[in-house]
Amino acid sequence: MEAYGVHAWGREFFSINELGHLVVRHADYSSDLKLLVDDLNKRGLALPLLIRFPQLLEARIALLNEAFQHAIVEYGYKSVYRGVYPIKVNQSRKVVEAITRSGKRFHYGLEAGSKPELLAAMALLDDREALVICNGYKDESYVETALLASRLRGQVIIVVEKPSELKLILAVSKRLGIEPAIGIRMKLSSKGSGKWQESGGDHAKFGLTAAEILHVVQHLRDEEALHCLRLLHFHLGSQITAIRSVKDALREATRMYAELVKLGCTGLGYFDVGGGLGVDYDGSQTNFDSSMNYTVQEYANDVVWSVQELCDEQEVPHPVLVSESGRAVVAHHSVLVLNVIDVSAPKGGGDITEPSEDDHNVTHRLWEVYSTVSRKNVREMYHDALDYKDEVLNLFNLGQLSLNERAKCEELFWAGCARIAEIVSGMSRVPEELQKLERVLSDTYFCNFSMFQSVPDAWAIDQLFPIMPIHRLGERPSRAAVLADITCDSDGTIDAFIDLRDVKETITLHNPNDEPYYLAIMLTGAYQEILGDMHNLF
Image (cartoon, rainbow, N blue to C red; front, side, top):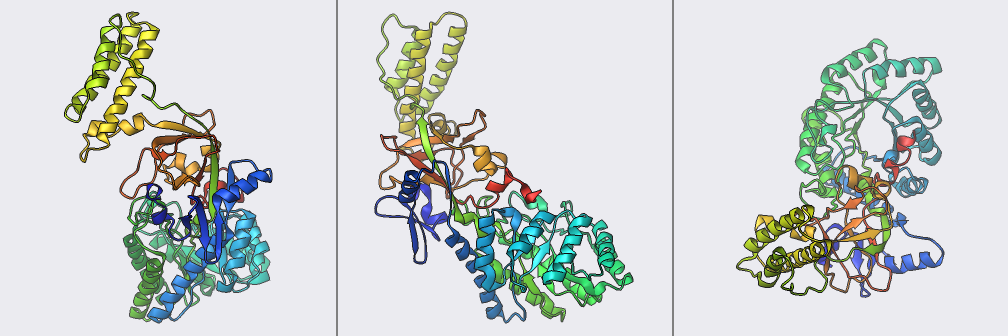
């Protein structure tokens, strides 16, 4: 159904069947969400339900790895791709297990941002060709664990993100007698695009400046450990919306890689482009914050081509390409299903009767708005209605209007607004002051969930997620609505919804009937569960 954009954001994995139910599909797998929820209810599982589809994890891992392999073959790139999954994006054991299992044929590794995540990676990853990348804050215990892990399995790279970390790594390495594999994270001058663009640039939280990188190289040379420098890493930020940002960053970072090789860093062999591969939450395929104006294949093509072109120009061997894509791998696999437990009465939807002669004059004026509004005078009548509404409040506060009269006036006001909204809906050009009417008149659908626990990004950073019913999709929805959770916090309201051209303030839903009404919040597999949990497993 076009009202919810499934054909745009969900074309890869989601569709609507002949029963009007939302279906999750991949290859030979298909699951009717409504029937699945009914079955889970019969088994005693109460809503809300977070439903995972590991088949979609497998599909996204394959898509990413095959995109890079296709680009490598097409351009004749003389090395390989080795992706890693950042555990922090979704640390659920079942998710990480599914990723390591599905990614084994691609030698797909893991990225750890803390000692607990590193321990989890070592427990779950049994492929010696897969990488383990160690990022994040590093104390002596974390570094020691990483070095011991490298003795057990190899392919563990500790990334220096602050100048002080190098001395610690070398000191622990000497004490244990284990040679480290070291990476450095460069601080790009280039910035990403979207909500997280400040993760890059000169004021980024992590990374070394050009001068600091030179100091690291000299320090390693002085310690006769320059051969331990194995990887160059950068990160533009999460959810990169514009491919141009990726291209700019690749030029800067690849130049840095070539310069380091020329400085004698002959052990350097990994080029880590970090995360940021986006998810098209709204299906618009644009550089809007909740979308991306490129495909996974275009992203892979640009990484491979950019690195190859500059390395060939500088006569530098092609490095192993590494990416730390998390959101793009796990977002699709998780669906949150809610049940609607109550719906507010529609404003202006009651029976309206003409005022009597005894009613206050302001009541008659509001009746005039309700009964005479037309396409020709709709703007004027709306302005009049707003004035009369203010007058009603003033009269009530002064004791010149009874409670019964105030209630009658409010009913007339909302009924008039409803008629105005009906007229406006048929206009090709809507006056600016009338564009908010749909939101003002919207119903509130109270849903059985906590916004702060289930979709914290929708509250914290205004992240948009596709939201839709999982059934009755063969019926035309008729009620403009916003969603409210069942917490006692007034912020627990979702009033921003995806649209191919803009952000909508309401979502169109069906009239309630005697049957349960289920909504799904889609593409919630990245970050939403862990933000309210133990982030980075600290």
